[in-house]
Amino acid sequence: METRVIPFSDDAIGEAGRLILAGEPVAVATETVYGLAADATNARAVARIYEAKGRPAFNPLIVHVPDFDAAERLGLFSDEARALAERHWPGPLTLVVPLRQTAGIAPIVTAGLSSLGLRVPAHPAMQALLRAADRPLAAPSANASGSISPTRAEHVLKSLGGRIPLILDAGPTERGLESTIVAATNGALRLLRPGPIEVDAVHVSGEKIEAPGQLASHYAPSKPIRLNVSSATTEEYFIGFGAIEGDANLSRTGDLVEAASLLFDLLHRADASQKLGIAVAPVPNEGLGAAINDRLLRAAA
Ligand code: TXA
Ligand code: MG
Image (cartoon, rainbow, N blue to C red):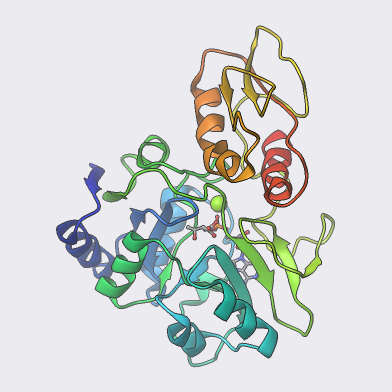
């Protein structure tokens, strides 16, 4: 299959919308990472996402909708969940809520769970595609299973080229990290994945994997990674931070927002380099730094 890369435009959205309604998966920019979107009401279309990514087991997918009203038609929102949605949507927050029986979401999307991950993305390309297709869109990150998430169209092409028909190129993504995931399924809010939005919720840690995709090794480059180092060997591609210089720097000024937006791009570059290993300078574990370190730990696992 030939994979076309088309810049985001009205025509491109029209073409992408037609492909979605024909049951094809399309890669599209969101404000977090590029997603591989398919009609969430069409089981065969969603199965093509798993096929293209080579995801071994069915792992529930996030469903994207254009606004809160559309989200409420699919899931049941507690007062706490509604408050979070009002505060952060559209934006990089996914809420896992009980699935409405009447939602019409293909069971393959939720991997048979009675809950549903919902997100209202802020990015104009994903928003335009949602409105053109007029369907809820299931979309995991647009990378082959187990590899680094894509923050540029070229990352998607490298990972999934030949396996999908179309990539809607809207440049590098702004946030660079996948959405924060919060479960609001039985009373208390639980943080399933740290991300761009800081939420006051109980942190669900390691042992009990509540977001099945949150396996320890998930964002793995093909090379060994050492974290929290102040110098690298000549065999390593060194990703610096702040005053610690390297082959590249996440942010010379120590800005965590900039670091988050560049993280996956630098991991892609390190992976593609001639070097045999990757070393990463320490990133402070506060605020957005906690989400960055979460992804780095998984990359190193
Ligand atoms: O920023 C993002 O969230 C991006 C863009 C494309 O929206 N998407 C993304 O999808 O990161 P993915 O498939 O790579 O990660 C989705 C995570 C997985 O860890 C999955 O297990 C979890 O969400 N998840 C989805 N539905 C769930 C549910 N009903 N219960 C628990 N976890 C769920
Ligand atoms: Mg992913």
